[in-house]
Image (tube, rainbow, N blue to C red):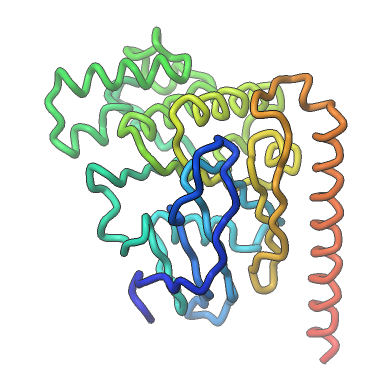
Length: 289
C-alpha cells in the first residue's frame, strides 16, 4: 500500500469557485485513487477529483458508494490502496500548520457527556496548548457563530439533537479551519431542523470563506448547499458526474421552490436513478455468472 503521497498534475483544474475568488492550485487533489479492503471489498475505484479553495462541494450517492471512505481519505484517516492525494499541493504532513488547517464533523455529535458545551468546543484548543484566555475568546466566538452563545455552561444532555450538532460544528470551527469536512452531520435530524442548520452552515461558509466538503444522501440538501455536486455510484464506488450548481449565492427558503433549484434536483435525481439501475443490472449479471 502506498502512503499518502504526491498528486500527479495530469488531472484537470477545477472551475471558478462560487465565492468569486480566482482559481488557484487545488486545495484538494485526488488522482486515480482506489481503496480495497482486506476482505476483497472494493470501496473506491479510479477516483479523480480536484477541489478549489472556496468551493462548497457535496459528495452525493447511495449507501455503499464510498462517500464517507473518500471523506476519511481527505481527513487523512484512511489511506488509499493505490493512487495519490495532495492537500494545498503538498503531502498530508503539511495539514495542521498555521497556514493549513482542517476540521471534520462526524455523523454523531461525539460530545463528552460529562463536560460543558464550552469545554467540548475548547477541546481542540486545549490539545494544541492554546492559552486559556485566547481559547475562551475563540470558543465564545464559535458558539455565537452557531447560535449557542447562551449555552456554553450547559451539558450535552440538556441540548436537543440539533443543538448538539451545532456544538459539534462549533468545535470544528473553533480552530478556524480552511477546510471543513462534514460526514452527513444532519442526517438523523428532522426536516425542519435540518433545513435550518443547512442555512446556517451555508451562511458560515460564505462568511468565513473556507472550503467545505459535505457528504449527504439528500439531493435537496446537496443542491441547496453546494457550488458543485459530485455524484457517486456503488459497486465499486466511483464518480460518475460532477454537476455545477448555478443558483443564487444568497439562498433562502424561497430558493428551495425556485425553478433553478427544482431543475438541479431533477438532473441529480435522474443521474442517481440511472446509476442505481446500472448497479442493479451489474449485480444481477454477477449473480447469474
